[in-house]
Length: 367
Image 1: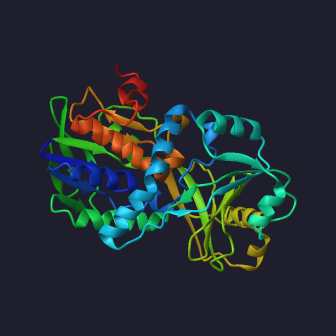
Image 2: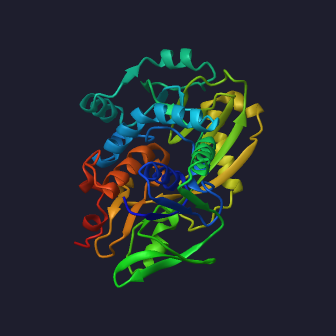
Image 3: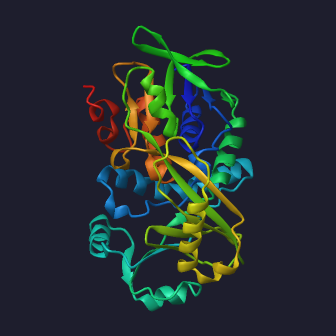
């Protein structure tokens, strides 16, 4: 293990990468331009599944399956270590009136996933609050959601308790330090930070940072807006999804409804249009929400990438620089497997899955 690893970007990917690497010894420094985990990781819904898993390539599916199986033990381990429970909440998920239901069921059979068509009456029995008029439903048992703000808090607390980890918040990275082609650290507003290797986990900002090396990484911000309601704890027993919008129950009765997909650069101002659109979707899914006022409305920036496949691994033309970014809509879903794979590559153990699917050089045409 190298002496000092510097990780740029303290979202869930950066936090979990630090957590994995710190267990192998050496020193780990994690830097974020604001507070840890306050961007996409905080803003998402936390469903531990892609919204439409059958619409993704095997590269995304492999990471998702590994992570889904791993999340319950990660939640337990973090809760035991920190006293902060990320609330990995297994509720299952109903998809209603899908256009591509046949593809979804064929995918589930091929991949041996517990997804099946159910009679619509079963959906209405399971979710009495569901709006009228839905004709068809498919259901996957075992799908969980994680309370992402608590996951971030728990990971941060776990790292703060590790003597070989340094967290630096509110410290903006402006570029990389180089010795020839080798990356040997970063430039920050507070001075240079040197390291044996740098891991870039800066989400939607990763492309901008790589541009300072003349590398065009197709990762760009995609805005998503969400609203939050507070209901009785038993109001929504399972997650529901229709027409691209979803409702997610937390254990305490909070209900998240999301989300928009907007290309608006780095602007994450919540808009009135999105609020109205999300409210309409919420009421269509769960009519009782017509009488509820959203308790919160916010926006975040997803790291959009081609086909939603993250870039994981080294950049050969800049030895010492590693990527773990570009997870698009599935950062929370794919985090455990992505960070395990990157750790495998960094410490030189056999990778948990085929690393070639995510290799930055091949995908960017740099080889």
